[in-house]
Length: 66
Image 1 (cartoon, rainbow, N blue to C red):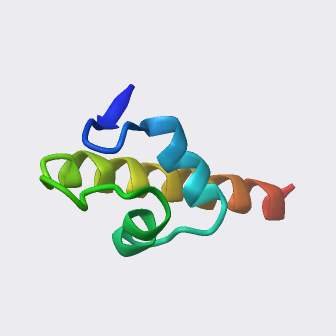
Image 2: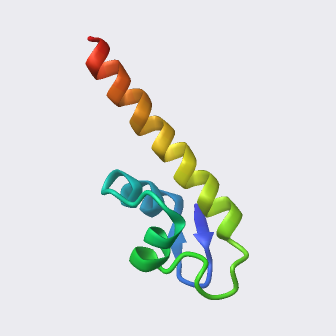
């Protein structure tokens, strides 16, 4: 789904950026242009970023526990 209409950024692109090392909103802004124009997408983009980071943490914990 499109999160940032101004820059045509999708939730998948945000998740990929997080998996690639983007940890903060400024990283997403620099890499994808999220929230750099009108800013209406900032809250949704930040939530997707947090969710993706939680998924990464959960996978990391599961691997170390195995």
